[in-house]
Image 1 (cartoon, helix red, strand yellow):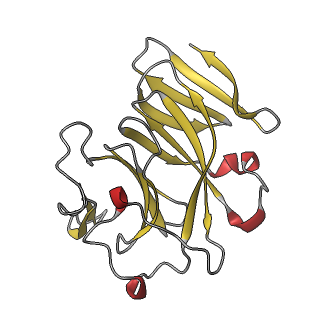
Image 2 (tube, rainbow, N blue to C red):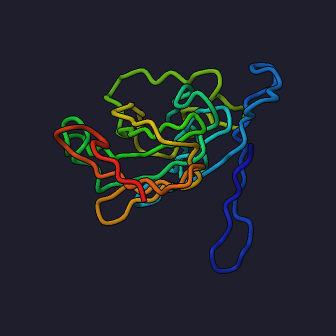
Image 3 (tube, one colour):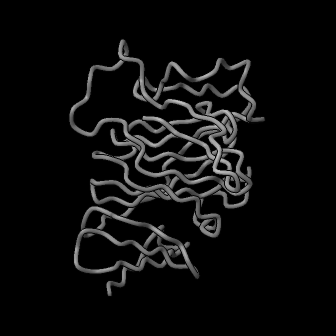
Length: 200
């Protein structure tokens, strides 16, 4: 799995980095390899989230691609989509505390999940699961992101089929999946992430 960063105006390649695990740490994977299925940058561009074919999602530094956090068991099948959705912050526990940013992920396991992305507490260990380690990750001393991050699951909902696209607009999460319908999910802060599902 490789990420390429291009200049938006000139089209020149600025940077590339690998998200692949070293072969010594992970055997060759035929089903659901670690291909990058989707990327989304956090507001401000300090980091991006990656949805990977092995079901994991990663947070990487926006400039150097260093690994900041990982959920290696985010989905039971390929993770197909990630989306930072700042307007969903009111759904996070202790909303507004610590500057947590909501992240949605969807996977071929027909699940939509809500995650809280926030700075790890000082001194809090941030283990990197073996599925998420990569030989291209810089050492801790070279990490340029000012804080270590944590990726914490908050809520989730079952979808009707494997998701093809996820969008957030006007307070509604829209999911196009492999079923013949479009799901519109209205977040409810009292009942959880997606209390109500309307299908068109």
